[in-house]
Length: 504
Image (cartoon, rainbow, N blue to C red; front, side, top):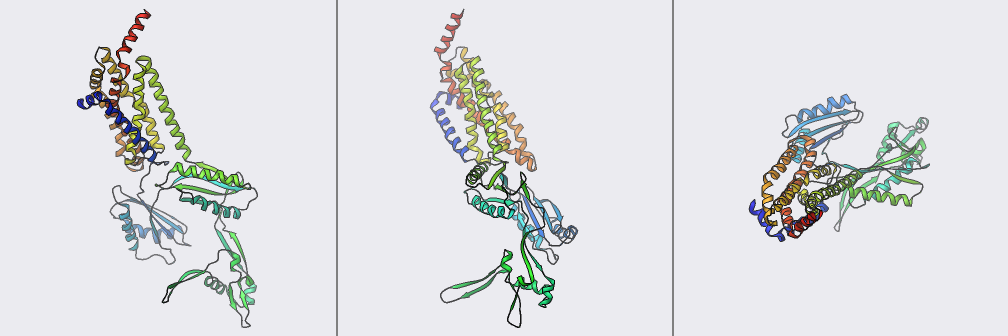
């Protein structure tokens, strides 16, 4: 270690090259980091969802869930599974052990479900899928004075499509309204008049409201695909569905025997904003998308939309990127205050140039950390920023000790280069052990199980990387700068002696 320290002190040009490398690579590293609300981790959860219309929670549990759970027992790689049964619906959540490939476990679970001997008649096929983490970026509502919910929904569909078309945004959810239904109220007297039954009406509607493939027709020139597309989405489209053809040649249409209306489902699923009917939107991000960028683009769209529409308005109810921006500002503020305090107190007791080179280690340490952060999967989030704020308070400690000790050796009459060498080597064991003990303390986060370990592990990565770079900067870069700066120049030393004598 002595040879390395001596080499960098005697050849300051090498130190300058190292600094330039830290600055350039660090700026490239920080620009490549994505932002997210929490650390990004691959999901280790698998969900099995089952729909069985008309079934009670007890029927879902006994007839479906227990059968699936019996086949899941003993699967390698499965930590545990929990289930929830409700009316018409059941969900089984499976947690995969750390270290196992989720895709392989997913195939094993599909095979286990396929081995279930029988399911109740009428049950829809179970859906088995890997859970995908999505982070809420921005939530907002669409509302207006005296605007119906149906109109808000139609405008909301347009807004949803426009936001989804923005580059970098793929996850948009719209809610706040019940499902739409087509109500067909059959008149019993008219059924009797035409000698019809309710089942005949139902069969006629089903036969005329289909969307299916009809195969293909091959010709010598080309092949034609046949597709029947006759599905109705609005009540008025069902008015002329033929229910029966009379002997006289006349046709009985659906509108002749029933009233057809578009209506909302009987559900309390409605949202209000400031007492007005509204539609809710939620823009989410995946692990491959940047939270701050998505939020900024969404806010920009909202501002443009409000400026061009007057009867309706978009209002932001939650902006998760604001927390990231505020913590980044806090980090910058703390860093500047820390550098100012270092400059002030070291300049007060030692020399301004020494204070400058000690404070110079703060940005170098962070730039060095950003070089390697992306390789460890670090993102700009609430926990990584928390780790950066923590480490600011302990970054310059080693630099202060080394700079002060170098100056102490210089006051003994040694040359600047020799003072830098002796002063650094003298405190090398103490500085190294102090940094290593802090690193060991934070490394315990890596051994925590579950989500706590995954989340706070990123705090440990940030702190360990920053402290390691700060140790390198304090042992290699700082002594070289101090040795070749005017802080240890003979002129400055004699100048202060002259001032002191003059003061007497």
